[in-house]
Length: 198
Image 1 (cartoon, helix red, strand yellow):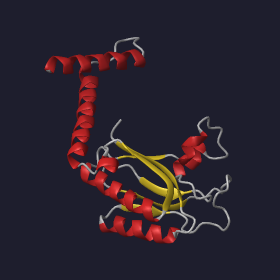
Image 2 (tube, rainbow, N blue to C red):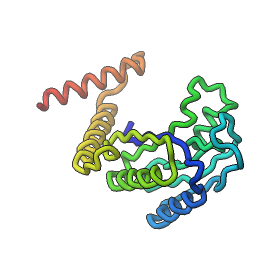
Image 3 (cartoon, rainbow, N blue to C red):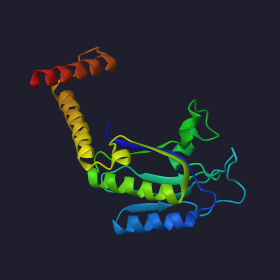
């Protein structure tokens, strides 16, 4: 639970992976964010293939109070990350193979400024280095550049999380109550409380 950014795409064949890594590394170092560099050059003649090797190419970084932002690819140029490769890669029996190329990062606890920085970084990288890139921003900043709307959405998520957290503290699970029934009861009580406030 928490506001997130979801993205997928591929690396431009004519672009330089090492240049992209250097740009992202410079930003991470400027903000004192931890980062990890993976392989920095793609093997020859692998772009567009359906097959890929067991390596990850690119970089990831972690702003404070934020999940790790992975800007990485498989050897065939499609976006992926270490976790996706491990759980949804070719040696996996995963029923969800599409998840191999879908990345996300939760920015809820990092705050709006970090969220905006990440979005601006993706806008820059998507023009210079990516193709077939799509991004879904739960904060709607990617589409609108509207800081006021982003704040409203962050506040909505924060209130929801706080309400839910408080509810779990105040309303205990009943003996022999299933988790499904418990969460349904919690949500109903939260919604009832909100209706009574208006």
